[in-house]
Image (tube, rainbow, N blue to C red; front, side):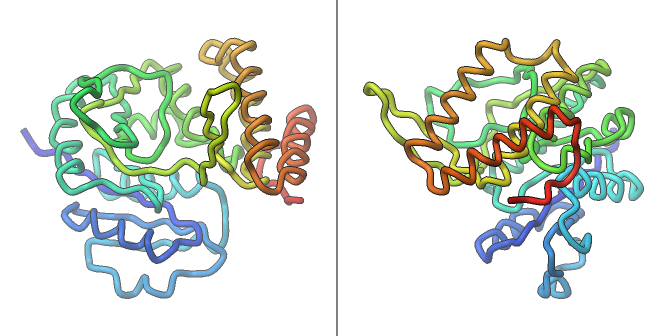
Length: 280
């Protein structure tokens, strides 16, 4: 049996020095494709090893577009699977090796389109094995490129936020499976979290920017509308929204701009506006 070919796709946006260290973790892969959504071209790209390639998009065209550019390049080059990564996510070398080796048997099921990994740390009490999930975040995934091609790729008019969940729902709608390998973990931060307590309960708020709050509001509503069969029940969605609002009010900075962005996101959903937001 021919060993499947895997390329890493890393999406950049204003990378920090610490993010660049993560690139070294993919040195043993045959190919790593860097797709840069930053406003300025990365000057150090000329110093990359031969098995790395760099593509600057000339500005921020959204996460969906960047992922489609990377997947298209990998698919055209004959790769079977893509490891999709955010710039600030990373695997330990042993975890990445296990993710790749275990995927060979999991992907024997032609219906499996995505194998996700846990973000965080595993310990002796962590659940193990492979389970199906409704949706997963993009970072840390092994993606079957023929499935990406068949369903038309990532949705670009969401720009950012909910792009990963929309893609998973679209795969499932087309008969594919999204699975989580609970035996593999990687490092990933969601926002810049802050915590607070209400009635003794410790609640973590993601502390995303106002811009991200806009896209989260707008796109979550479009997603519920487009895939009602996979959406949370309305009462659970509203509960999560209330908790988010409390987190912003109690623990996060720039409260006014974030609440205003959420309001604009809702308004633009009602007006059927997609694409990039001009901002505050």
